[in-house]
Length: 90
Image (spheres, helix red, strand yellow):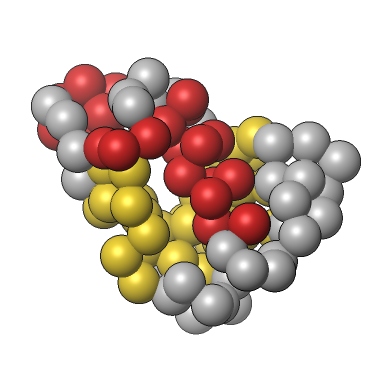
């Protein structure tokens, strides 16, 4: 499953804050992390948050597009139906 994410670094917490619409109408998951956007720290924190949210190991989560941008594509390996049920809860 590939999830579109809008990442906000330097936040007060690490969490998924639901789904938001971008200016172009695309729906993305809004994720906040405490890490700074330096040397991949924010992306590593994003992987940890997504892995915890989907109850998957960090090795099952990868940023596949947008590594240096706010809007990213994150791939989560696992049972698509189970992952979709978790994402629907957002």
